[in-house]
Image (cartoon, rainbow, N blue to C red; front, side, top):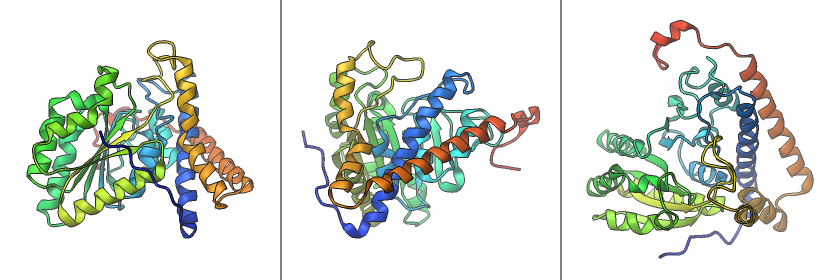
Length: 332
């Protein structure tokens, strides 16, 4: 099996870009931590699946895309919406079920949509959005544009028939699509051994010409570079790519699931935290003289301020009116 790709050199001229990647990951981490607290307080209803530990995948991949590209995600998608540019206010308000949320309070945690930014949502049914992403890619090609479609999904979706069928169609039709498997090792309904072999499964499933790459999902720059290559391939060659990002989430499957003690040990969790994506990028930037303690402290202060503002906004926003039962979120 191929080894995950890594990035070994930093370019001092890209210092602002590196800082923005770090800021986005930090924003997602703090947002998710505070969302977890709000859920425990009963302010967020339904299900809530946190992304803590996986920040490098969403941030790195989305940074490599254009604003007009399409993005599809599964139900663990708060991070993807934030990385795409949806405001922390709009995402938190949606989690609270408020009318000021990005889906007007109708979607909640698992169904964030921001069509204006090409964010085509979180989808609760495992693997259901993979064919939708292929459909968007087909439209991009059919209309003669150079837009692309990017799909994020967990490794459990590799057991779904639609995954195999879609990859084969995308390859056969040469669709401008990028499929990103966020392999966090503990997909619902998958054995650990099977989850770790997603890359091999996908390769066997794809009978046609599809590029593929394994990447260290805890390294935001590695994810960025892999996605940048895939996006270029999709635009210039109309050729799809499968990326397996090997990552790790620190939380349980959902807020109803224990962090450890059920299917993993505390020792395993602590060992994985040594590869934390935020601290990893911070450490590299400090070592290269591209970040100092004062800059990072200011970044933390601003991020905390942004998330606290989002919490106040969500708390104070009104619930949807009963008339919203009969309205379309995207039509006035």
